[in-house]
Length: 108
View (cartoon, rainbow, N blue to C red):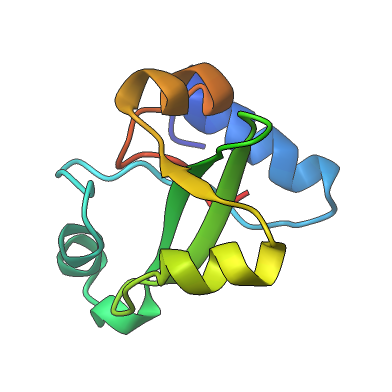
C-alpha cells in the first residue's frame, strides 16, 4: 500500500471503523476546488462531493454540509431547515474543529 500522510490515515481509519472498505488515495496535484478534484481524477465536477463547514451562530458548533461539486449550497435554505442561523467558518475555525484546512475537509 502506498504511504499516505497521517491526516489521510485518520480518514482511512475512520472509514474502516465505520465498516467501509474504500481506500483513501492522495493526489499529487491540488484538489482544493471541486473542479481541480474532477480534473485530477478525470471525472465530471458533479461527481465530486465537496465538504463545506459552517458555524452555527447560537452554539458556535460546526456544521458539515456535503454537496455535489456542481451545486451551490443555499445557506438560507439550510438555516431554515435547521431553524438555526449559520455563520461563515474561517480557516482557524475549520482547522480547530476538523483538523483539516479549508479545501481539504473530508466528507465525514
